[in-house]
Every structure is written in C-alpha cells, then in structure tokens.
Length: 107
Image (cartoon, rainbow, N blue to C red; front, top):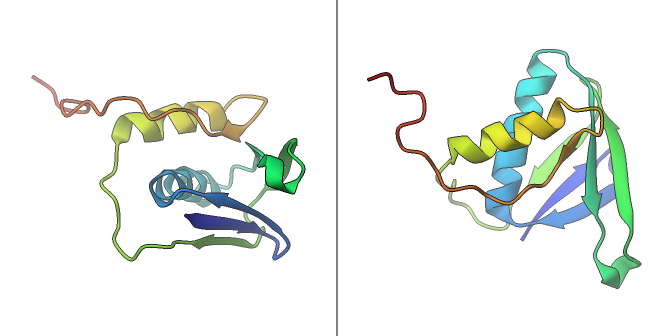
C-alpha cells in the first residue's frame, strides 16, 4: 500500500498500482500547467468522509510506494482518470477498466 502526501501533511493510502496511474495523470496535467482538484474517500478508521485538495504546479506532492517494481500501465485506466481530472469535480479514483491492447494502433 503506497501513500500520497500533499503539502507534507494531508496523506492517504492508495494501492501501488492505482497510485502509479494517478501519478502519471497528475504529472501530465502539471507539466501542462493545469491545476485541478483531487478527491478521495477516507477510510472509516480515520473517520470516513471525503478529502479534496487543490493541486497546482507549486504543490508539494509525494508518491511513496511500498513495492519497488513499476506495475504495468493500463492506458485505458489513464484515460479514464484523465477524463475525471478534466471535469469540474476533478480527479478521483475510478475502477480499472480492461486494458485495450489495440488502443492507439491504427489498422
């Protein structure tokens, strides 16, 4: 279980595979200078509820992984996450869709 840390104090645990996909979407948006909200549901062990942070190029973000191996990337999941990041409600976790091995290939 990895961790996402925002501005050194707001933290949440996210499974390494999901965290990798979130990191790819976040860094792509920040490279383009696009700020966005990022929301997640809190675990009942910390009181439940939902947290939203405003992510911008000057934000301090830490992606801390439990494992040392980079997981395989699912392009369909990146696209689904990026879609949420471009909506008014902002980036939030969505279930991983099946990966389309033909995505991006012209035939």
